[in-house]
Image 1 (tube, rainbow, N blue to C red):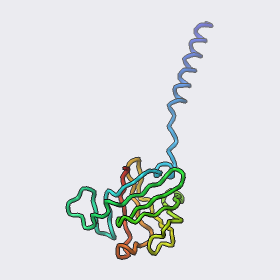
Image 2: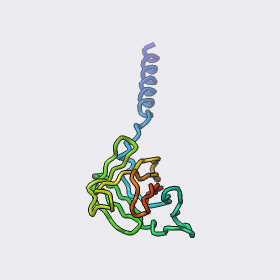
Image 3: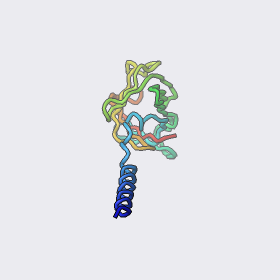
Image 4: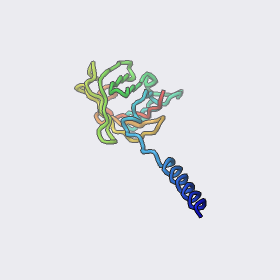
Length: 149
């Protein structure tokens, strides 16, 4: 009887440990998942797709220069399609807004701050929609599909 009780306790302990070790991992915060180096995969200016990586008929092939580097320490480097490079800080507000601030030099008409709505995010792709119109593209609201580099 004593051996059966000990064996039963050992089995229950083993099952408990295995079950506890297999629990779901908590998902990473948006700020952890977005902290990467991103490059343009496709870009829409307003409703018009003007760039697709590898596309032969791109209206604005210069978007191959577009990059967004979000370091885990909060430093952002933002390279626009015209190769202008801006450096500042970044933060995520809630789970749906990416804010680049203190950008130097200041992007045209931005006051040093550019905001994006995070439409979707996974490990290798993010879709960002600029909150304010871009003066460089004829005051359009632009959507950027970015992938990791």
